[in-house]
Amino acid sequence: MALTTERPVAVQHGQPSRPDRSAIATPAIPVAILAVIGFAVTSWLALFTAQGQQYDETARQVLDGAGSDTTARLVRLLQEVSVGSAAVALAALIVVALARGRVRVALAAVVLVAGANVSTQLLKHYVLDRPDLGVGSAANSLPSGHTTVVFSLVLAGVLVAPRALRWLVALIGAGVGGLTGLATLIAGWHRPSDVIAAMLVTLAWAALVSALLAGRPRDGRVGFGGVFPALLGAGLAAVGVIIYGFGWSASADASRVIPFTAAVIAGVAGVGVGAYSRLVARTSN
Image (cartoon, rainbow, N blue to C red; front, side):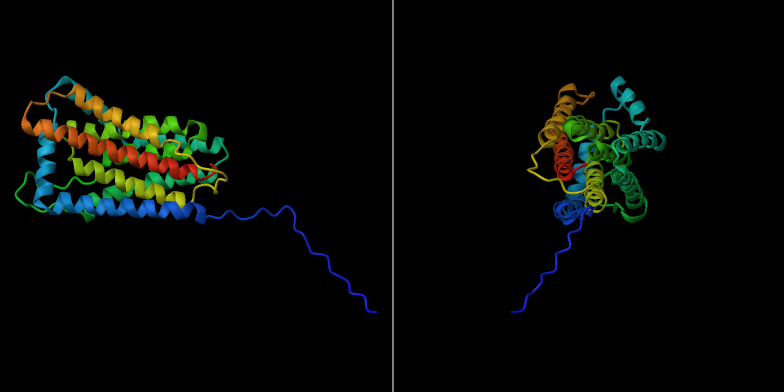
């Protein structure tokens, strides 16, 4: 009677399994695609249709608070948004990420901020043009550089923040992002579409770096984390701007344009920060 011997199955120890990056890329890629589509639609409507140009121009004129002391202070504050101040803020975020041992996240924050801001300048100065359709100034200002700087730092902050504090970063960040966008209108620097386009470009970059660079999949159920705080922060910013006012004249256009424009910009800021906060919550960073 022949005896058979079974070979022992080799068991490998100490070999961590590779993270399933598709768990991050699967939701991140659609977010990036939707942001790009939103940017394309916004650009087409605002630049290449007479109705879009007319609304942008009307909103720019109505929201322009030039002449008031508050607006002058607001302009001085916006002038502080520079390459130097952005570099300092980004450096602080990198320090936070490295202190938490998240080298990949620190790299992702750099790519997010640099990619969004370089893309904005290339799009505004070399790719997009505003044809003269007989509505206001023909000079193109889409996307807004100031909005991109601030919003990219906000989303980088969401990426870098510890999970326990991410809701707070989302709350404050969405408010600051929405307020910055509205401030560029009040200062007379930009049109509404410039601000919306800047936020969408930034969101696309944020989703892209999350798909390629940031973290590993997180186990367990993922809640809505910073979604509600982001919507709340952006909403409060819009309501505050509407209630406070900046020397706007009372008119039919003002009563219609100001609330709608503020709501749309706050909505894009809140949804963008909230969606990205939830996306980041799917990773373990």
